Length: 111
Length: 114
Image (cartoon, rainbow over all chains, first blue to last red; front, side, top):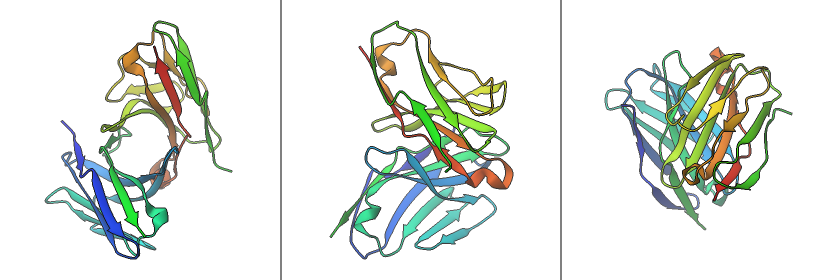
């Protein structure tokens, strides 16, 4: 069945780059998403990528997609303490709105 | 302001007492979903709706019902809640086509069933 996996924790120093990785299993996935959840809050859609793209950049965020390995990554440049949060990767198959989420990666940013 | 509202935000109830969590969006989105979030499991989709009167099961629909009589509202119904439904619930709405990037989540409803 469909599955999305992420590492649970990542710790970086302020000013460094963070790279959060995700693997997925559904080869029919068209949309791949990254969300941010701050403590006590709902989810915020950060960015998404279509499965026919390899890379997408949006200000400090860069998403890389390796379709062959079904590997997705989110790079945050110049990580700030305000970036401390849980980051979720999710996939959504072609033509549908069923969405599968990973368990989330908790990013700790040390000042 | 684009918004998804959920009510109530917090609810403590007892096993078997029917409850409804409301969800409303003001963006005229056709797509709406309900998720539950449990520690270590991320979000799991309960039900989703692609339009008025069109709903479908997500990954964990057992014990839940939904209805979509109007475009803006998508209530989640627990006919006979049980303790394993204690969780944090999120409603979301999303545009379609190129608007799929327009996606908003509600603030969450923390439900405790004793």
